[in-house]
Amino acid sequence: MSIVDIEGLTFSFSRKEAPVIKDFSLSVGKGELVGILGQSGSGKSTLLRLISGLETPLSGTISIAGTTVVSNHVFIQPENRGVGMVFQDYALFPHMTVKENILFGLSKMPRKDRKQRVDEMLELVQMEKFEKRFPHELSGGQQQRIALARALAPKPKVLLMDEPFSNLDADLKESIREELFNILRKADMTCIMVTHDRNDVEAACDYSIVMGQADVKNHISPKKFQSIK
Ligand SMILES: Nc1ncnc2c1ncn2[C@@H]1O[C@H](COP(=O)(O)OP(=O)(O)OP(=O)(O)O)[C@@H](O)[C@H]1O
Ligand SMILES: [Mg+2]
Image 1 (cartoon, protein in one colour):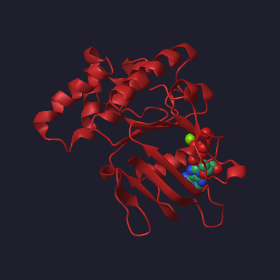
Image 2: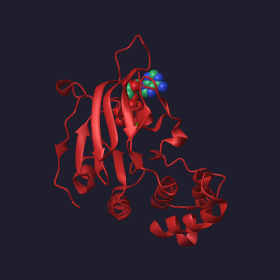
Image 3: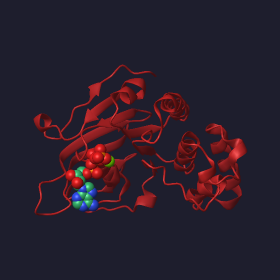
C-alpha cells in the first residue's frame, strides 16, 4: 500500500500566473525515502506545504495512508493529517526547553503517556542528557536531531523534510546524515526529503524526482536509485 498518493496536483499562488505545480503525481510506499530535487523556485517547498495542508491546491487529490486529505470536496486540517515536518531552519521554539519542544506536538496523546514518549524520542536521537537545554545552547546538529524528535514524537504516517542539512557544515552534515537515515530506517518511517544535494539522494534515498523539468511537465516518473535497505 502506498502511504502518500498524489494525483493530478495543480497549484498556483495567483490566478494571473502560471501554476507553480502542474498535474503532478507521486506515490510513496511504506518505509520509502524519496528525494525531491529541483532548481530554486521550482516548487519543492510548495509541494511539501500542499501535502501538510499549509496550502490548498487548485485541483488534484492527496491521500495519506488511504485517507483522502484534500480533493475538490475534502480538506483535512494540517494537524489531523498525520504528517510530521522538519523545516529548513528547524523552527524549534526558542523559549522552550528541548523537552517542552518535543512535548508540544503531543497534546492529543493521553497526559500519562507523554513523558514516556519524550524519553523514547530523546533516546532515539541520543539526546537524553539534553532535555533541559534551550535550543540556543545546542549545536546545529543537535538542534537538527531535536527537530527530528519533535516531528516523530506524535507518530506521523509520513515525515516531510525541507533541506534538513542546509545549516550544517560539510563534515557535520555527513555524520548527521548517516545518523538521521539510520533513525528513519529503524522507525520504518515513510519520508519525503527536499534537498539540493544529489549526494543526499545517493546516500540515502530509494529514489528521487526532479521538480519543474519542462520535458516531463512536472509529471514525474521516479528514477530508481539502488536501495540501501
Ligand atoms: N507566498 C508566495 N506567494 C507568491 N509566490 C510564491 C510564494 N511562495 C513561493 N512563491 C513562488 O513559487 C515558486 C515556488 O516556490 P518554492 O518555495 O516552492 O520553491 P523551492 O523549489 O522550494 O525553491 P528553493 O530551492 O529556493 O527553496 C517560486 O517561483 C516562488 O517565487
Ligand atoms: Mg524551498
